Image (cartoon, rainbow, N blue to C red; front, side, top):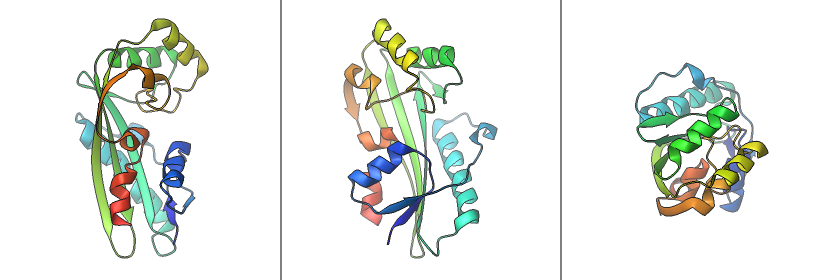
Length: 182
C-alpha cells in the first residue's frame, strides 16, 4: 500500500522514489512562521507536529499511512530559516561558509498499526564558499524555499569537507530511518 507524503517537496518525493517506496503526494499547508522556538530541535519538532496535525485532520490514516517531515538548518548557534530575499539568502549562506552546519529533519509516520516520530541530524563541515560561485547560486534562485538556503546536493556539495550523518536527512527526509519501520 502506498503512503501519503504530506509535503509538496520535490526532493522528498525523489528520495522516496529512489528508495523504492510507493507513495502519493498531497498535503495541506501549515504556517510555520508562527512557531517560536530557541532550540533547532524544538523548532523542527513543532513544525512537523503542526504539519502532521493539519494533514491528519484533512486526510486521516485509514486510506493511506501519513508521512510528514520538516527540516531546519543551524550554524553558529542560529536557526537558519528559509530566506525571504537574496540578501537574506546571502547572509544565511555566509553564516555557514567555513563552519559546521547541522541539518535536522523530523519525520512523523503514522499508519493504522504504528506511529513513528524521529529527529535525525546530519553535520556538514564546509570550506569557505567562493564568492563568485555564491553570487551565481544566488542569481539562479535555486535557494528559494530551502531551509538555510542550503543545497547539499547542489551548490554546497563542492564545499563539503566532512559529513557526519545521512545525506537524505539533509535533503529533507531520513529514508534510512523510515525504511526500518515500513
